[in-house]
Image (cartoon, rainbow, N blue to C red):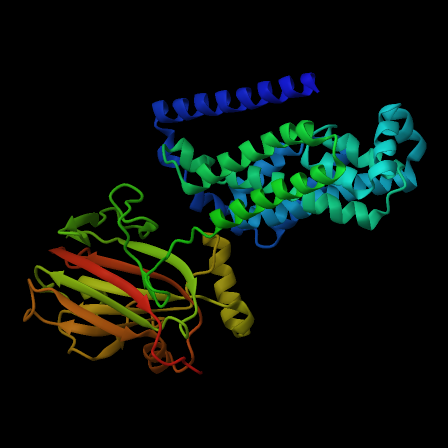
Length: 477
């Protein structure tokens, strides 16, 4: 036991030493600017269902080949994030444990018995005396190497279903700990300490404490069982709470604030990402400012075009009401909503709606699949642009000059209210139904954008109090 304890301590110290050195190298070389978790996951998503399937297959055969499972588990957190990383890693590890078990029991019993020697007899004695409890203990506490255990249990008399369920339940806490922690590594390399890192670190400490609990209570079967289950439950609960760190902030259960007091990448609000376009090199500058406790996005455009985007997946029947306040310092004098060369606005907020291939026509699926092959993900099905119009009369709506999948709605128009804060509210469900003639799909994101690239002008705009709210009465399509 003392050797195992020393070995675990050295392994943990070595791991964190390498991690600290890696962070220092990345920061010194300036490589942190290229570490983007969202880009990595978009690349993984470009493989469609093949990505998770390949990952699970690799994980399922690794134990039989005596390949270490920890790097694969860490890769799951990096590639798929804390939620799906846990799901895929858990499925893969259980499949791997099951395959080795079945190989030892039905196909290579003599060979495995000779390979393990006397070690499997100790495991056989433990199973005989304690049954599934022994499986639970050895899964939660690293008494024996994981890959050897899978084969060794196949030589015992424990029923396969009991082995399968017990292994899954008691391997899950360790899987959660490593996946949640590893999902924060890219942010950590960029110098950001996320909630996932803190929670993952706590989970790793709990997993590391499991052997101490075992040594303290191994003399009592009942207490050991209770403490083992309690340890696993604590890890699972803390991990679940960490996964509840959603990117939307609720105020009272029916309102979702899209601007929070935390700052995210560069000068942007937390969870907002830059939105740039090909062949447009000059980008609008966006800055999060605080005026007497009010959070405001300032957009400065100088013959430039880009936006910032908040991505999510929301049901417009649940959150149909979008409200915001905005202010502009001028309108675009050469702006013309009907022409491409005039498609510039001092201020616009636009909402994108998710493309659902299951509800699309054959032509739409073909077209959108072609775009996905190029860019790695489906584009939005449609978008509504709420604009501070230059010439279009207030209340009017027309198709965008570039595509009819985007509709332009003039919420304000002209220079009458230039320099004033104006607050708006729109019903997304009703607007989409009116503009596109069908019920809206899921809301996939909201963006703000000030652009002057087509006209070569300049403009400054301010956006505040952006939020989504539920309706007084539920919407029924």
